[in-house]
Length: 393
Image (cartoon, rainbow, N blue to C red):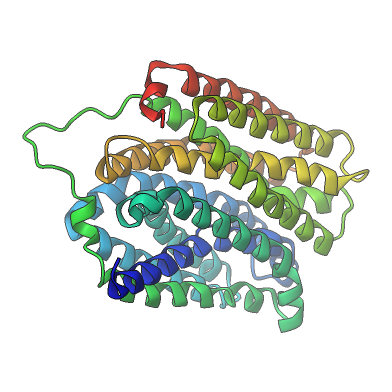
């Protein structure tokens, strides 16, 4: 590798990692600040119900639209416009008005939705033989940034004297990612790497796409209820808002090493089986603890739930390795995320409706435990069916 190619790869790796930083940061910071935004009047109770459901709704639309958008204007331009939307949307959340916070969140999530779909294929297209290490790096950075946002969201808002100032401050990472991506994409022919061979008929989706979609849907449903409502569930149980934010931070911090282990397991069929059972069992155990004894050991329940959150990087690793190349991986990613997020939107919406109606959180947590069990069953089917042989290293 020549010095110039090494520099180009280093810049692209930096850009990919900065993109990953933003994929969950806008979600977790809004989640931990939700009680404060309500207290300050920046959100109405009705708007507060909408905010946690926005990510999955926009991600579902993004899963459908992104492959078309990539073909229409090119992959590099699609990511550029998407990151611009993320930056503008997060900056809009400085304004202490429900329409600005909800609208800014929707715009930011629309941009994140596009990057969500494109990132696994971008990694495959630009990292070559380094795909495994780059996948590990970006999933780790994604989880770490989520944890930092969850743990630091409330303290930063208190330091700045306003929940909306604390919420909008995180836009700096989106602006930075936007600039670095523009510089990095000029040194790589991303569009050529992600273009599918021309054909008169559209080939069928790779085998295993639909079980992968089901697994993705359930892990997203569980994850976004946790990210959207865990601090509120904890506060309603008698835990302080600051500690509730730390609990979400623990969930995401634990998901980092758990995700590293899960991604490493994704390279063998036996590893996938162990991984899907392990993450599902962690979710089920933590949610049961949160239901039966929320204040007795909340940090322990957060550790277990964090183990379950490793289902997301595990799924991303399987998507990145699906199909015969980056173009097919983009198609699989679009279907899995489009359909998966559409299904998972039911979770935070239903939880929000239940919260708005003044219901106890017990039925929501029990339903999540059932979802974790179903996730394990679909994951085992994914690793045991005929499609699994296509993922054998």
